[in-house]
Length: 419
Image (cartoon, rainbow, N blue to C red; front, top):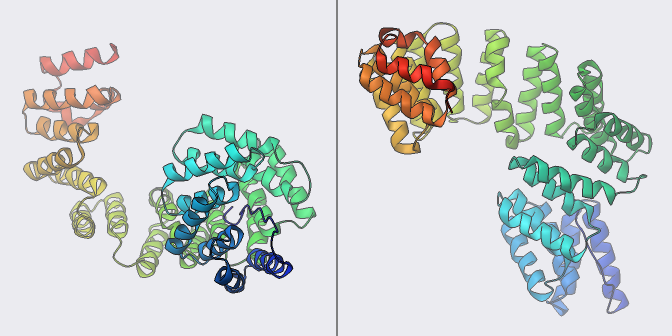
């Protein structure tokens, strides 16, 4: 979705200039960004305020990942031509990539105010709102985009993408099949079809689609990552890990997505498979705090809390502000009956991150184990004010065994279903 630039070439001026603009646009579409820049710079030498040339140059710098230069050029375009819908869309793309979703949304919205029939801006608005967990608004923009995309040609892929986002998988599948038959974005269409088949619990077929996508474009990291997900669902953990590692070697941007799946691997996969992933991931991105953290989780699964504690210390050394690692450290210290040190961890979390219910709960469990019933009830009360489900958890938690008959604890538990 990153190259759906909208350009409105007015084709005014000399025939030579118009020809250069057309050639620059074609070079950009074909991925020859340096040639596009050469052509636009020739135009800008004689006319530095030419909006079309500036917009094409900005897009070329964007594709070359020179975002600072691209941003400056997009702002210049919008200064000279504030109602340029294509420039608003393109600048929105840059802001989305740069991690500024709020400003990106404003430019996509401005684009569709100026040019309502601009499906790409609706799609990106939907994508951003989906990442912000505003699913209802996101779906509305996807549907608006869908209504503006007629069937046929390149639009089959876009329609498949939108229908997939809307959870209308059978229609999405049909559009991806048509896109493949028309040889439009063939590799991405096979990948999209694989994603839909996986959502329909048809992972063996999904794997075939992902393999076809990779055969057509082996350098796309997302294809390898999606293949890895299907392999995990098919319980082929070793091959799934290899796909994840290949994805990471191609693009570090998938680091977070791979890390999200390690907990599942720790629970389900053989230990040596998880170790292989962690060892190789450490080589790909050395010094990352997630690696010793997940090693600690793996050691806890194997019943080695002291070794796990050393891993958590290393993780916190790499990222001292990690609430996740600090919470797990407190939990491990509690298991090791080092109660004062565990309390220090939970207190540190509350000092750094505010009123987190799980930190209050962790304190309550430690205080109960110390026999400090009143303090434990006070901490559990603070936890339950944020999350009443923690009272059910406390009733089942053996840490509270020593205060199970305390009147304050019993009053709190009895009141757990009272709104």
